[in-house]
Length: 108
Image 1 (cartoon, rainbow, N blue to C red):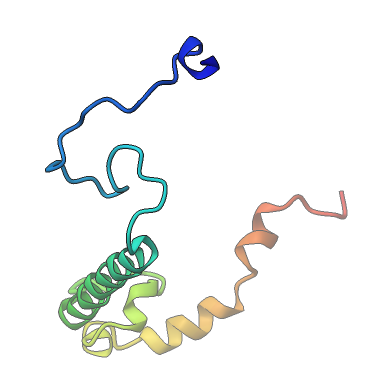
Image 2: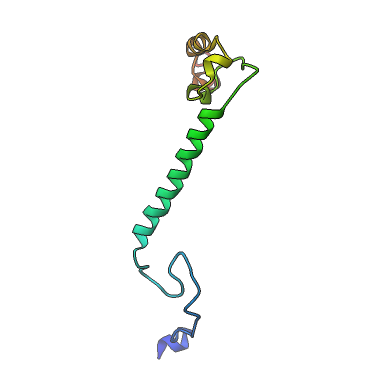
């Protein structure tokens, strides 16, 4: 009786053929919900891996950059497009880290 006064009543009729990723109306425990989530994440990861692989195989830089770019480490044609890449990588590691460059100087 208290539920009816507060607006809680029986569930109203709803269409059974409507699909929802969360399980639809009033479904507290979707059947195989965690399994379906893992499958979905696996599909997303597979698409990411294929995209990364395709990108690394086809990336070309006809005009070599001044500093090394992270994606060049995985690209197939890095040494063809930029013969000085290894030296640029060594020189770039000698630079101070990004954090040390943006933090205020402690000597001030």
